[in-house]
Image (cartoon, rainbow, N blue to C red; front, top):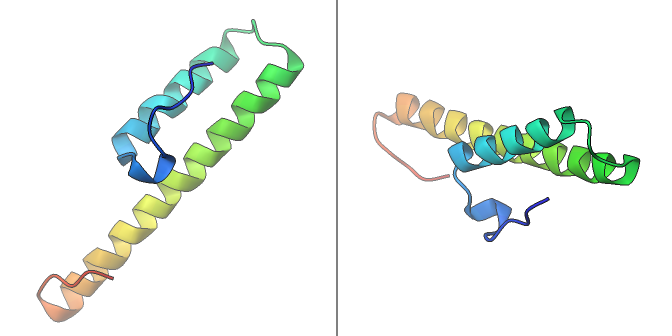
Length: 74
């Protein structure tokens, strides 16, 4: 399993999606031990939570733009 060169909070949602797809491909390959599978599962769930947080943050920004008519960072 390749380690990330950047911190998770520095990733774009697209980069996180690519990493999640790589995790899924590795899990589906069936060549992992139980321990490796569990580590991959944890990594995948962490990526899913990160992407969910990204989407939530973007939704909040959209709501704020719609309410005020201008861009305000949360």
